[in-house]
Amino acid sequence: MTERVAIVGAGLAGSLLACFLARRGLTVTLYERRADPRVAEVERGRSINLAISERGLDALRRIGLVDQVMAGALPMKGRMIHPVEGPLDFQPYSAGRDRAINSISRGALNNALLDAAAEAPGVEILFDHRLVEFDSQAGSLIFATPAGKVEARVDVVLGADGAGSAVREQLLADGAVVEEVDFLDYGYKELSIPAVAGEFGLDPGALHIWPRGNSMMIALPNPDRSFTCTVFWPTGSFDALSTPAVIEEHFRANYPDLLPLAPNLIDDYLHNPVGLLGTVHAQPWQAHGRTALLGDAAHAIVPFYGQGANCAFEDVVELDRCLDDTAGAWARALPLFEHRRRENTEAIAEMALANFVEMRDKVASPVFRLGKRIEHGLERLLPGRYVSRYELVSFSTTPYAEVKQRVHRQHQVLAAAVLVGAALTGAVARAARRHR
Ligand SMILES: Cc1cc2nc3c(=O)[nH]c(=O)nc-3n(C[C@H](O)[C@H](O)[C@H](O)COP(=O)(O)OP(=O)(O)OC[C@H]3O[C@@H](n4cnc5c(N)ncnc54)[C@H](O)[C@@H]3O)c2cc1C
Ligand SMILES: NC(=O)C1=CN([C@@H]2O[C@H](COP(=O)(O)OP(=O)(O)OC[C@H]3O[C@@H](n4cnc5c(N)ncnc54)[C@H](OP(=O)(O)O)[C@@H]3O)[C@@H](O)[C@H]2O)C=CC1
Ligand SMILES: Nc1ccccc1C(=O)C[C@H](N)C(=O)O
Image 1 (cartoon, rainbow, N blue to C red):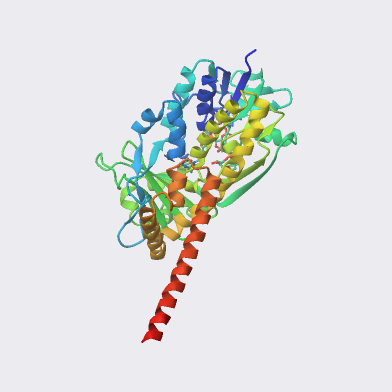
Image 2 (spheres, protein in one colour):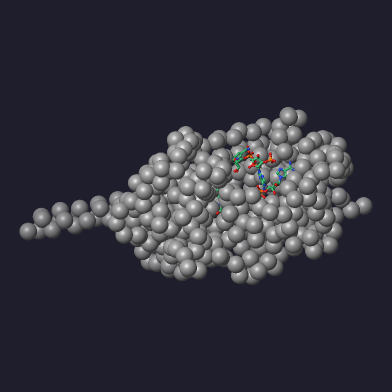
């Protein structure tokens, strides 16, 4: 008998997973609480575009979607730093200056994945189905739908229902999972920079950053030549700006070059929601050999490396690999998946937090800029032997935990080389003085 698989959540991970499982000949039902986004109106103010890099592209390549998705992508080759005063500063992401992360519309990416899932044999997608109850032992799910509650009984349940996962919540209530959610004392709000006379208001080849020490704003380009800006501010500071005059004054003082580019600033600010940011640590990710969490439901991270979706896509690739390696036996594949992925997701969670400090503060410093130039110089001098963290995270599929270890080793070797160099220089100088 073919196993019946339910995926809860038709977001990025869930719809990609449906495509992968369909290739295995499985019967999959994808349940999504929202209406079909391909026909329904999308609400305003939630992360509109995403930086997709090698890990995400690798997953899309495997299901033949990469060309379609990349056709709408805008490559960003580096960071463009906007100081309060003075000229902009472009900082390339890679030593060769040619590699780029890609600004992609979240909606278009999700829709492309939903189309691919809908066309895949054996996949059914049910929208307007919100998971409200789940008995993980019995494999029974209850969904609230516009027509009332419906029940489904399946063999395998995969929770791809995002950071506030209902599947995780139910496993938590049953004592099958423990969790710790570290909320950041920061929130985010999206603002927009429309196209100016049909052209981009800023350079579309960069990810723009306004580093302000304790907070920051970023902007990513969209195919319609607009930019989506996101401010990341301490939670309490959003409400402090409550009138149009105060909002305008704050942006004039801190982000002066935004004002002429953002005619809808006040309206965006007053009407777009403040989103929460946090890291989810859940353990274990699987229960009873037939239920597992993946993507944000298992390990949501803060967005500052632009890796959450990339990491969720990598989960899907790894889960598929685990099914290969266990001849499709879910009871063995799910623990194996957790075993292989956990240390990697913990590593990117840590690196994502560290990248916030880099983006909001360090990028503005001349010492940081010099360090980056030296690092890129080393990468050119020692190709393949010295590779920066950014390169390994964004432009390779090296497991995140290995990235951390490798960068640590490189820094140790470098520190030792600097010490030896300094000692040798000192010895040579002393010998020269003795010979004088
Ligand atoms: C501001 C911001 C910027 C980001 N930028 C980037 C970036 O540049 N690059 C990047 O890689 N990542 C980025 N991320 C992270 C990325 O958005 C997430 O990691 C990614 O969306 C996770 O995918 P997912 O499928 O696990 O969850 P989601 O995309 O959240 O999908 C979950 C789905 O489950 C559905 N669902 C939820 N509850 C239920 C329920 N009870 N029943 C049925 N369905 C349900 C939801 O409606 C949704 O469709 C960013 C995140 C934020 C907050
Ligand atoms: N909850 C958690 O454990 C964690 C959350 N976060 C982050 O916090 C933020 C908020 O999370 P959380 O509150 O759990 O969940 P959601 O972001 O899913 O929900 C927040 C609110 O937004 C609404 N909403 C969400 N998606 C849509 C949509 N597509 N269309 C219309 N309305 C929508 C929800 O409505 P409705 O009630 O109808 O669903 C709800 O009122 C997210 O950005 C998440 O990344 C980070 C780490 C942990
Ligand atoms: N997409 C994002 C969303 C929010 C915050 C950062 C990003 C980034 O992509 C940052 C980029 N990786 C950087 O290091 O410059």
